[in-house]
Image (cartoon, rainbow, N blue to C red; front, side, top):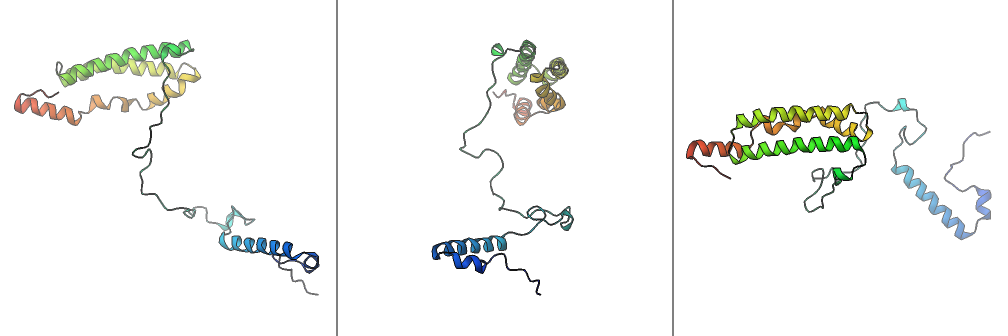
Length: 193
């Protein structure tokens, strides 16, 4: 007795006798398609019954497509997508509304000090000094939002509080325009606006 298995991609003789020529042509085309797909696709533990131990655990998956030459994010000419903020007045949550008002008040102070520094009435040292209480106030308000337990506040306030040092980079580091303005004042006595 022979224990040879019949090829699964052939039509058994009993069925082939009963098939019409049209059905036989259709089945042959399907079998050919199956052969091509099996030859094309590699066998891996993810798409077959092979055990996962047959693949190295740190093997990189094969690259499906070539890397694009474009940078990540929005491309030039692409319309900007952003989620508009709702005005504080339209907010139903009183706790969030109160925090919004308090943060807006601190933000006004921040931009007032920045405008005074940018336009020249105060020095950089005075600007840094005036920003210290504003920074403490904003960080205190963010911490209040984190500890509020209010689902609409906790996530945003936690993220801002975790990265609070980034919010104040413009206070710690002088930008190019400020350095140029300062140089012009020293060298030429010019105040550039």
